[in-house]
Image 1 (tube, rainbow, N blue to C red):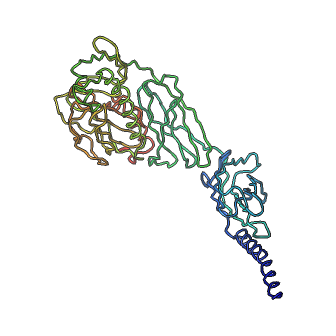
Image 2 (tube, helix red, strand yellow; image 1 turned 180 degrees about the horizontal axis):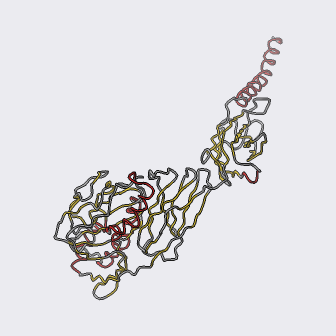
Image 3 (cartoon, rainbow, N blue to C red; image 1 turned 90 degrees about the vertical axis):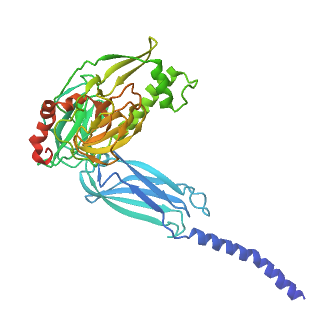
Length: 460
Protein backbone atom coordinates (compact mmCIF):
# COMPACT_ATOMS: atom_id res chain seq x y z
CA UNK A 1 0.00 0.00 0.00
CA UNK A 2 2.85 2.28 0.92
CA UNK A 3 4.61 1.56 -2.41
CA UNK A 4 1.44 2.40 -4.26
CA UNK A 5 1.16 5.77 -2.52
CA UNK A 6 4.82 6.55 -3.38
CA UNK A 7 4.22 5.74 -7.02
CA UNK A 8 1.18 8.01 -7.08
CA UNK A 9 3.19 10.76 -5.36
CA UNK A 10 6.00 10.43 -7.90
CA UNK A 11 3.49 10.46 -10.76
CA UNK A 12 1.93 13.70 -9.44
CA UNK A 13 5.36 15.26 -9.13
CA UNK A 14 6.03 14.46 -12.79
CA UNK A 15 2.87 16.23 -14.00
CA UNK A 16 4.26 19.78 -13.65
CA UNK A 17 7.51 18.67 -15.23
CA UNK A 18 5.70 17.12 -18.16
CA UNK A 19 3.44 20.18 -18.50
CA UNK A 20 6.45 22.43 -18.34
CA UNK A 21 8.27 20.45 -20.96
CA UNK A 22 5.13 20.49 -23.14
CA UNK A 23 4.86 24.27 -22.81
CA UNK A 24 8.54 24.70 -23.60
CA UNK A 25 8.16 22.42 -26.61
CA UNK A 26 5.10 24.35 -27.81
CA UNK A 27 6.86 27.68 -27.39
CA UNK A 28 9.97 26.33 -29.09
CA UNK A 29 7.82 25.01 -31.94
CA UNK A 30 6.21 28.42 -32.39
CA UNK A 31 9.44 30.38 -31.98
CA UNK A 32 11.30 28.08 -34.34
CA UNK A 33 8.84 28.80 -37.16
CA UNK A 34 10.48 28.89 -40.57
CA UNK A 35 8.37 31.40 -42.50
CA UNK A 36 10.43 34.16 -44.13
CA UNK A 37 9.46 37.83 -43.84
CA UNK A 38 7.72 39.46 -46.80
CA UNK A 39 9.16 42.57 -48.47
CA UNK A 40 8.26 44.71 -51.50
CA UNK A 41 10.56 47.52 -52.61
CA UNK A 42 8.77 49.99 -54.90
CA UNK A 43 11.01 51.82 -57.36
CA UNK A 44 9.92 54.76 -59.55
CA UNK A 45 11.43 52.92 -62.52
CA UNK A 46 14.43 50.94 -63.70
CA UNK A 47 16.48 54.17 -63.57
CA UNK A 48 17.18 56.06 -60.35
CA UNK A 49 18.08 59.74 -60.29
CA UNK A 50 19.30 62.11 -57.62
CA UNK A 51 17.27 62.41 -54.44
CA UNK A 52 14.51 59.94 -55.29
CA UNK A 53 12.29 58.49 -52.57
CA UNK A 54 11.96 54.71 -52.40
CA UNK A 55 9.12 52.92 -50.63
CA UNK A 56 9.56 49.61 -48.78
CA UNK A 57 6.74 47.46 -47.40
CA UNK A 58 7.79 44.75 -44.91
CA UNK A 59 5.78 42.18 -42.96
CA UNK A 60 6.28 39.21 -40.63
CA UNK A 61 3.08 38.06 -38.93
CA UNK A 62 4.59 35.28 -36.78
CA UNK A 63 7.89 36.29 -35.18
CA UNK A 64 7.85 40.03 -35.92
CA UNK A 65 10.45 42.18 -37.67
CA UNK A 66 14.02 42.32 -36.32
CA UNK A 67 16.08 44.26 -38.89
CA UNK A 68 15.96 45.79 -42.34
CA UNK A 69 19.04 46.59 -44.36
CA UNK A 70 19.25 48.07 -47.87
CA UNK A 71 22.56 48.43 -49.67
CA UNK A 72 23.81 49.45 -53.09
CA UNK A 73 26.58 47.62 -54.95
CA UNK A 74 28.38 49.20 -57.89
CA UNK A 75 31.88 48.81 -59.31
CA UNK A 76 32.79 46.34 -56.54
CA UNK A 77 31.92 48.78 -53.75
CA UNK A 78 28.90 48.44 -51.45
CA UNK A 79 27.27 51.28 -49.52
CA UNK A 80 24.41 51.17 -47.02
CA UNK A 81 21.37 53.12 -48.20
CA UNK A 82 19.06 52.40 -45.27
CA UNK A 83 18.98 50.35 -42.08
CA UNK A 84 16.39 49.95 -39.32
CA UNK A 85 16.22 47.72 -36.21
CA UNK A 86 12.96 46.89 -34.45
CA UNK A 87 12.43 46.22 -30.71
CA UNK A 88 11.70 42.83 -29.14
CA UNK A 89 8.80 42.14 -26.77
CA UNK A 90 10.86 39.49 -25.00
CA UNK A 91 12.55 36.22 -25.83
CA UNK A 92 9.27 34.31 -25.75
CA UNK A 93 7.14 36.81 -27.70
CA UNK A 94 9.28 37.97 -30.61
CA UNK A 95 9.19 41.41 -32.22
CA UNK A 96 6.72 44.16 -31.40
CA UNK A 97 6.40 45.29 -35.04
CA UNK A 98 4.68 42.94 -37.47
CA UNK A 99 4.19 45.23 -40.47
CA UNK A 100 5.48 48.61 -41.62
CA UNK A 101 5.83 50.84 -44.68
CA UNK A 102 9.07 52.81 -44.81
CA UNK A 103 10.30 55.56 -47.11
CA UNK A 104 13.91 56.57 -47.60
CA UNK A 105 15.98 58.56 -50.08
CA UNK A 106 18.49 57.32 -52.60
CA UNK A 107 21.25 59.95 -52.93
CA UNK A 108 23.91 58.95 -55.50
CA UNK A 109 25.89 62.10 -54.75
CA UNK A 110 26.08 61.44 -51.02
CA UNK A 111 27.13 57.85 -51.72
CA UNK A 112 29.73 59.02 -54.25
CA UNK A 113 28.10 56.75 -56.85
CA UNK A 114 28.61 57.41 -60.56
CA UNK A 115 25.99 56.89 -63.28
CA UNK A 116 25.59 53.38 -64.67
CA UNK A 117 24.34 49.92 -63.68
CA UNK A 118 24.25 48.84 -60.05
CA UNK A 119 22.49 46.42 -57.69
CA UNK A 120 20.17 47.19 -54.78
CA UNK A 121 20.48 44.53 -52.06
CA UNK A 122 17.57 44.06 -49.66
CA UNK A 123 17.78 42.03 -46.42
CA UNK A 124 14.97 41.55 -43.87
CA UNK A 125 15.34 39.44 -40.68
CA UNK A 126 12.72 38.37 -38.14
CA UNK A 127 12.80 37.30 -34.45
CA UNK A 128 12.42 33.56 -35.10
CA UNK A 129 14.76 31.23 -33.18
CA UNK A 130 15.79 29.65 -36.46
CA UNK A 131 19.44 29.77 -37.45
CA UNK A 132 20.62 29.71 -33.81
CA UNK A 133 18.61 32.81 -33.05
CA UNK A 134 19.50 34.72 -36.18
CA UNK A 135 15.94 34.35 -37.52
CA UNK A 136 14.45 33.82 -40.94
CA UNK A 137 15.87 35.99 -43.69
CA UNK A 138 14.41 37.55 -46.82
CA UNK A 139 17.06 38.53 -49.37
CA UNK A 140 16.70 40.01 -52.86
CA UNK A 141 18.90 41.74 -55.43
CA UNK A 142 17.45 44.28 -57.88
CA UNK A 143 19.41 45.57 -60.88
CA UNK A 144 18.95 49.30 -61.53
CA UNK A 145 20.57 52.09 -63.54
CA UNK A 146 21.77 55.28 -61.87
CA UNK A 147 21.01 58.31 -64.03
CA UNK A 148 21.61 61.76 -62.55
CA UNK A 149 21.86 63.71 -65.82
CA UNK A 150 18.79 65.82 -66.75
CA UNK A 151 17.42 65.32 -70.26
CA UNK A 152 18.63 67.62 -73.00
CA UNK A 153 15.70 69.59 -74.44
CA UNK A 154 15.69 72.20 -77.18
CA UNK A 155 13.01 74.28 -78.89
CA UNK A 156 13.33 74.02 -82.67
CA UNK A 157 10.27 75.98 -83.84
CA UNK A 158 10.38 79.75 -84.26
CA UNK A 159 8.08 82.77 -84.14
CA UNK A 160 6.31 82.12 -80.84
CA UNK A 161 3.81 84.96 -80.80
CA UNK A 162 0.84 84.46 -78.50
CA UNK A 163 -2.08 86.59 -77.33
CA UNK A 164 -4.11 86.70 -74.16
CA UNK A 165 -6.86 84.15 -74.68
CA UNK A 166 -4.97 82.69 -77.64
CA UNK A 167 -3.35 79.42 -78.71
CA UNK A 168 0.02 78.39 -80.06
CA UNK A 169 2.32 75.53 -80.99
CA UNK A 170 5.87 74.68 -79.95
CA UNK A 171 8.01 72.00 -81.61
CA UNK A 172 10.91 70.72 -79.51
CA UNK A 173 13.48 67.95 -79.36
CA UNK A 174 14.62 65.54 -76.62
CA UNK A 175 17.74 63.40 -76.43
CA UNK A 176 15.92 60.59 -74.57
CA UNK A 177 12.44 59.25 -73.86
CA UNK A 178 10.90 61.20 -70.99
CA UNK A 179 8.19 60.47 -68.49
CA UNK A 180 6.84 63.99 -68.97
CA UNK A 181 7.55 66.86 -71.33
CA UNK A 182 5.74 69.91 -72.62
CA UNK A 183 5.34 73.65 -72.17
CA UNK A 184 4.62 75.44 -68.92
CA UNK A 185 2.61 78.67 -69.20
CA UNK A 186 2.48 80.28 -65.78
CA UNK A 187 0.72 77.76 -63.53
CA UNK A 188 -0.65 75.69 -66.45
CA UNK A 189 1.11 72.76 -68.09
CA UNK A 190 0.54 71.66 -71.69
CA UNK A 191 1.89 68.15 -72.44
CA UNK A 192 3.82 67.32 -75.55
CA UNK A 193 3.17 64.48 -77.97
CA UNK A 194 5.29 62.38 -80.32
CA UNK A 195 3.67 63.33 -83.59
CA UNK A 196 5.32 61.02 -86.08
CA UNK A 197 7.82 63.60 -87.31
CA UNK A 198 10.54 62.44 -89.69
CA UNK A 199 12.94 63.04 -86.81
CA UNK A 200 11.63 60.78 -84.02
CA UNK A 201 13.34 62.91 -81.35
CA UNK A 202 10.94 65.80 -82.09
CA UNK A 203 7.68 66.46 -80.21
CA UNK A 204 4.97 69.08 -80.34
CA UNK A 205 2.86 70.80 -77.72
CA UNK A 206 -0.26 72.87 -78.30
CA UNK A 207 -0.50 75.56 -75.65
CA UNK A 208 -2.79 78.35 -74.52
CA UNK A 209 -2.46 81.66 -72.78
CA UNK A 210 -5.55 82.08 -70.61
CA UNK A 211 -7.54 85.30 -71.03
CA UNK A 212 -6.47 86.44 -67.54
CA UNK A 213 -2.76 85.62 -67.84
CA UNK A 214 -0.75 88.86 -68.30
CA UNK A 215 1.88 89.47 -71.02
CA UNK A 216 4.71 88.86 -68.52
CA UNK A 217 3.53 85.28 -67.81
CA UNK A 218 6.57 82.98 -67.90
CA UNK A 219 6.60 80.38 -70.71
CA UNK A 220 9.23 77.65 -70.86
CA UNK A 221 9.88 74.07 -71.96
CA UNK A 222 10.08 71.35 -69.31
CA UNK A 223 11.18 67.72 -69.54
CA UNK A 224 11.49 65.04 -66.86
CA UNK A 225 13.06 61.65 -67.52
CA UNK A 226 12.19 58.31 -65.93
CA UNK A 227 14.85 58.80 -63.26
CA UNK A 228 13.16 62.02 -62.10
CA UNK A 229 15.79 64.38 -63.54
CA UNK A 230 14.17 67.59 -64.74
CA UNK A 231 15.16 70.22 -67.33
CA UNK A 232 13.78 73.73 -67.76
CA UNK A 233 14.52 75.53 -71.03
CA UNK A 234 13.68 79.14 -71.80
CA UNK A 235 12.96 80.25 -75.35
CA UNK A 236 11.92 83.42 -77.14
CA UNK A 237 8.23 84.34 -77.12
CA UNK A 238 5.87 87.26 -76.87
CA UNK A 239 2.39 87.55 -75.35
CA UNK A 240 0.30 90.39 -76.81
CA UNK A 241 -2.22 92.09 -74.57
CA UNK A 242 -5.87 91.93 -75.61
CA UNK A 243 -8.79 94.10 -74.60
CA UNK A 244 -11.99 92.22 -73.85
CA UNK A 245 -15.43 93.71 -74.10
CA UNK A 246 -17.58 94.64 -71.11
CA UNK A 247 -21.13 93.37 -71.46
CA UNK A 248 -24.23 94.34 -69.47
CA UNK A 249 -26.77 91.54 -68.96
CA UNK A 250 -30.22 92.63 -67.78
CA UNK A 251 -32.15 89.76 -66.20
CA UNK A 252 -35.92 89.95 -66.67
CA UNK A 253 -38.06 88.47 -63.90
CA UNK A 254 -39.70 86.20 -66.50
CA UNK A 255 -36.29 84.68 -67.33
CA UNK A 256 -35.53 83.95 -63.67
CA UNK A 257 -38.99 82.51 -63.06
CA UNK A 258 -38.41 80.04 -65.92
CA UNK A 259 -34.72 79.16 -65.64
CA UNK A 260 -34.19 79.05 -61.87
CA UNK A 261 -36.79 76.30 -61.21
CA UNK A 262 -35.71 74.44 -64.37
CA UNK A 263 -32.00 74.33 -63.51
CA UNK A 264 -32.36 73.85 -59.76
CA UNK A 265 -35.01 71.16 -60.19
CA UNK A 266 -37.63 72.87 -58.04
CA UNK A 267 -41.34 73.41 -58.76
CA UNK A 268 -42.24 76.50 -60.75
CA UNK A 269 -43.74 79.21 -58.57
CA UNK A 270 -41.99 77.94 -55.42
CA UNK A 271 -40.90 80.28 -52.65
CA UNK A 272 -37.22 80.00 -53.62
CA UNK A 273 -35.68 83.48 -53.83
CA UNK A 274 -35.10 83.97 -57.57
CA UNK A 275 -31.96 86.06 -57.18
CA UNK A 276 -30.38 83.63 -54.71
CA UNK A 277 -31.35 80.76 -56.99
CA UNK A 278 -29.78 82.49 -59.98
CA UNK A 279 -26.56 83.08 -58.05
CA UNK A 280 -26.39 79.38 -57.14
CA UNK A 281 -26.67 78.60 -60.83
CA UNK A 282 -24.34 81.31 -62.12
CA UNK A 283 -21.64 80.65 -59.52
CA UNK A 284 -21.76 77.17 -57.99
CA UNK A 285 -23.29 75.32 -60.95
CA UNK A 286 -21.06 77.17 -63.42
CA UNK A 287 -17.99 76.25 -61.35
CA UNK A 288 -19.01 72.57 -61.20
CA UNK A 289 -19.74 72.49 -64.95
CA UNK A 290 -16.37 74.05 -65.79
CA UNK A 291 -14.64 71.50 -63.57
CA UNK A 292 -16.36 68.73 -65.54
CA UNK A 293 -15.24 70.32 -68.81
CA UNK A 294 -11.67 70.65 -67.51
CA UNK A 295 -11.64 66.98 -66.50
CA UNK A 296 -13.03 65.80 -69.85
CA UNK A 297 -10.57 67.92 -71.83
CA UNK A 298 -7.51 67.05 -69.72
CA UNK A 299 -6.95 63.80 -71.67
CA UNK A 300 -6.71 63.64 -75.43
CA UNK A 301 -5.83 61.19 -78.17
CA UNK A 302 -2.16 61.38 -79.11
CA UNK A 303 -2.72 62.14 -82.78
CA UNK A 304 -4.02 65.03 -84.84
CA UNK A 305 -7.46 64.17 -86.20
CA UNK A 306 -8.39 67.57 -87.61
CA UNK A 307 -7.31 69.16 -90.90
CA UNK A 308 -7.43 72.76 -92.10
CA UNK A 309 -9.10 75.71 -90.37
CA UNK A 310 -12.05 75.02 -88.10
CA UNK A 311 -15.53 75.58 -89.46
CA UNK A 312 -17.76 78.30 -88.08
CA UNK A 313 -21.46 77.49 -88.07
CA UNK A 314 -22.75 79.05 -91.33
CA UNK A 315 -25.35 81.81 -91.64
CA UNK A 316 -24.98 82.97 -88.05
CA UNK A 317 -24.45 86.30 -86.36
CA UNK A 318 -22.33 86.71 -83.18
CA UNK A 319 -24.32 87.64 -80.09
CA UNK A 320 -21.55 87.41 -77.48
CA UNK A 321 -17.79 87.25 -77.82
CA UNK A 322 -14.98 85.33 -76.19
CA UNK A 323 -13.98 86.51 -72.69
CA UNK A 324 -16.70 89.17 -72.48
CA UNK A 325 -16.68 90.60 -68.96
CA UNK A 326 -20.32 90.25 -68.04
CA UNK A 327 -22.10 92.27 -65.36
CA UNK A 328 -25.53 90.95 -64.40
CA UNK A 329 -28.29 93.36 -63.40
CA UNK A 330 -31.64 92.62 -61.83
CA UNK A 331 -34.08 95.52 -61.43
CA UNK A 332 -31.22 97.96 -62.01
CA UNK A 333 -28.97 96.44 -59.34
CA UNK A 334 -25.70 94.63 -59.96
CA UNK A 335 -25.95 91.06 -58.64
CA UNK A 336 -23.04 89.19 -60.25
CA UNK A 337 -19.96 89.19 -62.53
CA UNK A 338 -18.77 86.38 -64.81
CA UNK A 339 -16.62 85.86 -67.92
CA UNK A 340 -18.16 84.40 -71.08
CA UNK A 341 -15.89 81.57 -72.24
CA UNK A 342 -17.00 81.16 -75.84
CA UNK A 343 -18.79 82.81 -78.75
CA UNK A 344 -22.59 82.83 -79.08
CA UNK A 345 -23.82 82.33 -82.65
CA UNK A 346 -27.48 82.95 -83.57
CA UNK A 347 -29.40 81.76 -86.61
CA UNK A 348 -32.96 80.58 -87.11
CA UNK A 349 -34.36 78.42 -84.30
CA UNK A 350 -33.29 74.77 -84.24
CA UNK A 351 -30.63 75.18 -86.93
CA UNK A 352 -28.31 72.27 -87.65
CA UNK A 353 -24.96 72.51 -85.84
CA UNK A 354 -21.96 71.15 -87.79
CA UNK A 355 -18.82 69.68 -86.25
CA UNK A 356 -16.13 72.34 -86.58
CA UNK A 357 -13.56 69.74 -87.60
CA UNK A 358 -12.87 66.03 -87.62
CA UNK A 359 -12.61 64.37 -84.21
CA UNK A 360 -14.05 62.02 -81.63
CA UNK A 361 -17.02 62.78 -79.36
CA UNK A 362 -15.95 62.65 -75.71
CA UNK A 363 -19.07 64.16 -74.10
CA UNK A 364 -22.70 64.42 -75.20
CA UNK A 365 -25.07 65.05 -72.32
CA UNK A 366 -27.00 67.64 -70.35
CA UNK A 367 -24.48 69.80 -68.49
CA UNK A 368 -25.88 72.40 -66.08
CA UNK A 369 -25.70 75.96 -67.41
CA UNK A 370 -24.50 74.70 -70.80
CA UNK A 371 -27.61 72.58 -71.31
CA UNK A 372 -27.37 69.85 -73.93
CA UNK A 373 -23.65 69.80 -74.73
CA UNK A 374 -21.27 68.06 -77.12
CA UNK A 375 -17.48 68.08 -76.75
CA UNK A 376 -15.23 66.78 -79.55
CA UNK A 377 -11.59 65.77 -79.11
CA UNK A 378 -9.54 66.76 -82.16
CA UNK A 379 -6.32 65.26 -80.81
CA UNK A 380 -3.22 66.35 -78.90
CA UNK A 381 -5.17 68.49 -76.44
CA UNK A 382 -7.43 70.42 -78.84
CA UNK A 383 -11.21 70.35 -78.23
CA UNK A 384 -14.39 72.06 -79.44
CA UNK A 385 -17.57 72.51 -77.38
CA UNK A 386 -21.17 73.04 -78.53
CA UNK A 387 -23.76 74.10 -75.93
CA UNK A 388 -27.45 75.02 -75.44
CA UNK A 389 -28.51 72.41 -78.04
CA UNK A 390 -32.15 71.43 -78.38
CA UNK A 391 -31.15 68.01 -79.70
CA UNK A 392 -28.00 65.88 -79.73
CA UNK A 393 -27.42 63.65 -82.76
CA UNK A 394 -24.13 61.95 -81.82
CA UNK A 395 -23.07 59.32 -79.31
CA UNK A 396 -20.03 58.90 -77.06
CA UNK A 397 -16.76 57.81 -78.78
CA UNK A 398 -18.28 58.45 -82.21
CA UNK A 399 -15.92 59.76 -84.90
CA UNK A 400 -17.38 62.76 -86.74
CA UNK A 401 -16.18 64.42 -89.91
CA UNK A 402 -15.81 68.13 -90.44
CA UNK A 403 -19.25 69.61 -91.22
CA UNK A 404 -21.22 66.58 -90.03
CA UNK A 405 -24.38 67.43 -88.11
CA UNK A 406 -24.06 66.88 -84.36
CA UNK A 407 -27.34 68.44 -83.18
CA UNK A 408 -29.67 71.43 -83.35
CA UNK A 409 -29.40 74.87 -81.76
CA UNK A 410 -31.64 75.58 -78.80
CA UNK A 411 -32.07 77.34 -75.49
CA UNK A 412 -31.26 74.55 -73.01
CA UNK A 413 -29.26 75.43 -69.92
CA UNK A 414 -28.85 79.08 -68.96
CA UNK A 415 -29.79 80.45 -72.38
CA UNK A 416 -32.28 83.26 -72.95
CA UNK A 417 -32.85 82.51 -76.62
CA UNK A 418 -32.12 79.92 -79.31
CA UNK A 419 -28.42 79.98 -80.25
CA UNK A 420 -25.17 77.98 -80.26
CA UNK A 421 -22.54 78.60 -77.60
CA UNK A 422 -19.27 77.55 -79.25
CA UNK A 423 -15.97 77.16 -77.40
CA UNK A 424 -12.46 75.94 -78.18
CA UNK A 425 -10.15 74.53 -75.51
CA UNK A 426 -6.51 73.48 -75.30
CA UNK A 427 -5.96 70.96 -72.50
CA UNK A 428 -8.78 72.42 -70.43
CA UNK A 429 -8.04 76.11 -71.09
CA UNK A 430 -10.69 78.07 -73.00
CA UNK A 431 -9.22 79.92 -76.01
CA UNK A 432 -10.56 82.33 -78.61
CA UNK A 433 -12.25 80.33 -81.43
CA UNK A 434 -11.71 83.21 -83.90
CA UNK A 435 -8.08 82.16 -84.33
CA UNK A 436 -9.02 78.61 -85.28
CA UNK A 437 -11.63 79.88 -87.76
CA UNK A 438 -9.02 82.02 -89.54
CA UNK A 439 -7.23 80.08 -92.36
CA UNK A 440 -4.32 82.51 -92.35
CA UNK A 441 -3.76 82.26 -88.58
CA UNK A 442 -3.95 78.44 -88.69
CA UNK A 443 -1.46 78.29 -91.55
CA UNK A 444 1.03 80.78 -90.08
CA UNK A 445 0.94 79.59 -86.48
CA UNK A 446 0.12 75.88 -86.66
CA UNK A 447 0.20 74.14 -90.02
CA UNK A 448 3.40 75.71 -91.36
CA UNK A 449 5.29 74.51 -88.26
CA UNK A 450 3.89 71.01 -88.62
CA UNK A 451 4.71 70.83 -92.31
CA UNK A 452 8.27 72.01 -91.70
CA UNK A 453 9.03 68.94 -89.60
CA UNK A 454 6.38 66.34 -90.37
CA UNK A 455 5.25 66.69 -93.96
CA UNK A 456 2.35 64.46 -94.88
CA UNK A 457 2.72 62.32 -91.78
CA UNK A 458 0.80 64.81 -89.63
CA UNK A 459 -1.01 67.25 -91.89
CA UNK A 460 -3.29 66.05 -94.65
